[in-house]
Image (cartoon, rainbow, N blue to C red; front, top):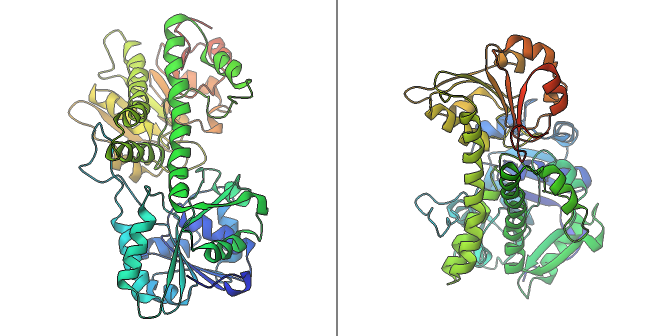
Length: 465
């Protein structure tokens, strides 16, 4: 297949897709591989212009400085896709693979691969020499076979391709750190792709220890990504389901989680009760795994993973109902201050955020919301919410302003600044009784209650401290 087998041969890498994966991945690679030129391309000129400006389209701690150091040296952002493909020995595909509209059901949701397929056709049409094509997008098993077939059907004479699966394992908010210090790098290929795998491994070997660069079959690599996200989502749903038991019995979910996490077989990661998981990956990847399992004739497996999604959704409903039930006549006409709209702290991403689901349920019951998030722009909030007939909302510039005359504060993203807020001032500007619903158990409950707040936390029955 492709004959690139030495790190010195790789001089140009093209990344198609200037989003949350392509941009940070290319920036870190450029930083660690100064002798390789990296070009990130996209059809969205506005996004490319943002990457070439001082206001990047993606917020990640440490990303700005990396881009500024490498941009126009060996890191480039362009809309000239064809030229970048033509120059590259390695082309990474990092485009969006959302759940396909109309396929959502109890059997999951099929991933929409149209952008991946379009990229494969374009690579085949533009490549002038043997090229390694790398799947960075999260895709279902067998996508590499589809890409390989498209490349064969559309390739120029005497041009050969190797298709590798190199899934990303980034966590938004820590993407740069995850890229600089990965737990593992997975490179999956077909039986004849050893040289291509070695070529890509040589790029990572500039900074990743060789024992953390793992080669395997392409299907295994594709499934490893879905499986990793599914297992993480499963842990979130597991601890949140136990939080419901705690709220009904008087146990404290944080104490239960600590006891379980101290078991070395279980560990403490992702055992923090919250309002639920969100973001662009977990729900989509679990739904894709459900669909894959159902399509393979494995209904019990599909149902198992579907219950992870159902538990997540029912947990958000239960948390919302605790807010509504705290008011004798419900929340119609009640001003509620929402602190946090991003799906997690450390990012401005509001895709599939639990905050949108919870806010919408409150709006549907007539609540008047004042929303504040330090990173999510107002335009994203407005894209997600519909005030409806009786509800209304405003987006505020700071947390205290959002709390003025509110009867409740609902913390939906665990931003560190909320812990350091002057809660005495917040209490003074709120209505009475002043309630706090801590959706992530990040606040000092005893301090808040000493000030005078009525506090509700996840996984603790009301009235139990």
